[in-house]
Image (cartoon, rainbow, N blue to C red; front, side):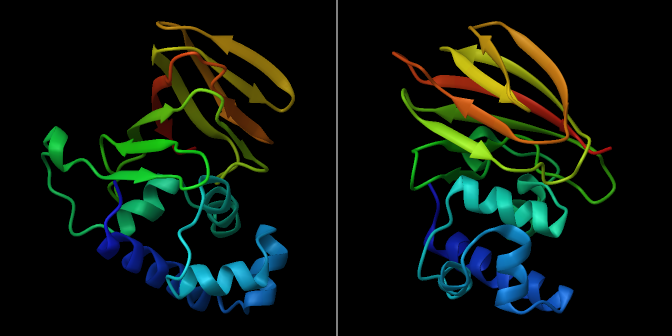
Length: 187
């Protein structure tokens, strides 16, 4: 799914973002809730980040995960064939994220496909950008989406539109993987 090149570019981008903000590892650890030692290993490329860790870092930097991942890709083409769409896999949960339409600096919306294996759960403590608008459409399986403590049980074909302001969580109860499409719109 991920290539070694992508992992190295992601590590370098994470280090560059911290430097751009003028933060020490301790500063970023305090802002993100990710330990100093883990941050150091992530920035050196010794450890692949989980979706939860990337979510915390994106929240600290005020950017979406799509934007961060697009920043480590080569110049994005105008047309992206299915085989060329960037994939990222969470090593902790097996969650697979496909950037269907990589972000562009002048555009505010993007499409992301997610596949969550049965039993997997991902929790985010804060949105990457407060007020981020999302439209979620379940393409297959079932998904429990929790937004600020309110659970939404979605089956194939169901959709939900919402804005992120607090905690969120994705859980696939199974027995099949949950496959869904999210339209992400910056406020």
